[in-house]
Length: 360
Image (cartoon, rainbow, N blue to C red; front, side, top):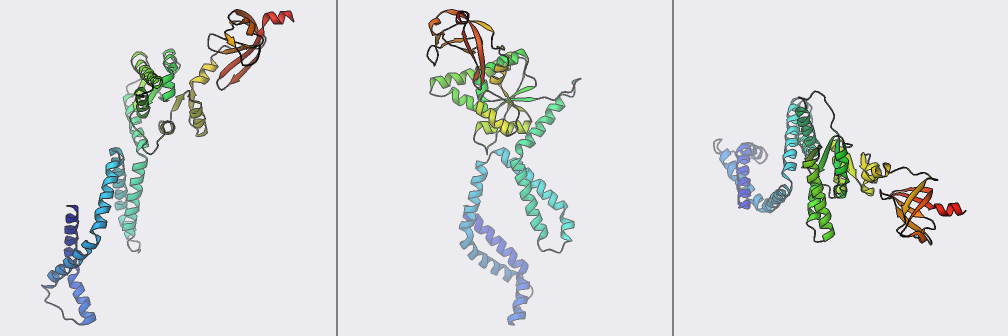
């Protein structure tokens, strides 16, 4: 069917061109070859016949190429998301409008086909801008809606977006932090993070499935029980495959901060200049400060890595390595802090039994 339509279009174009340029062609041939001009009223119709014959043979030669090109373009458009097509078309229209406004000054420049070239260039640039900048355009309109909704408030405040990643949602401590009121602004939960949580919750692995369901429960708790503003970001970045890269891109678009406890994502955000809030850093910052020489009362529960060491824990989970503490396993003992080591995994305290200090 498509081939037939293309052939008909070729014939229509050939007939129109023959009707338009047939008389001029006969005049040219008559001046060159002295073939004799047919009657003036007949030349347009002879031109139509010649145009139909010429374009009929051209259609047999070019129809496959044209049909394949049309089908390729159709497949590309069908695969593209509707938002990409809409914003690309809007950019194309704006580019052509600008080219139309510039037509008169450009037409005065004596360069052949310059208006056509400028129109094609501006149309292409408009399409590319609309296609590639759709997320920024959508965010501008969403920010406008938010500010319009705030006009009735007495105090105008800039909402700071805190973008949650998958790890911090599954971790669950973000709900407790929100309950205390230390998180200001709006929590943004991207749609692609929700999709990743759903995949984890539907996993065949029991551990992953439980982690995913815990994350969904935490989100439900934050949204329904806590007095914090939660926004679901429905947009996506189709050209980016990794969720972490999408989070960084979204943080740049919304001018927000990424909330995570992923060490690698933390480093990538810092390299790209994106503000990041790490829950682990916050937990380490609020742990009680322990100085060398202080006395602690702990229970030694297991062996350490080195010979004779024992391991104890504070209430906040901080590990204490007790030198010579192996003999006190299972019992409570007073220890003196000798040094404190801060690592990326947390804080580690080294100590020795107070009884040993007295013996010395």
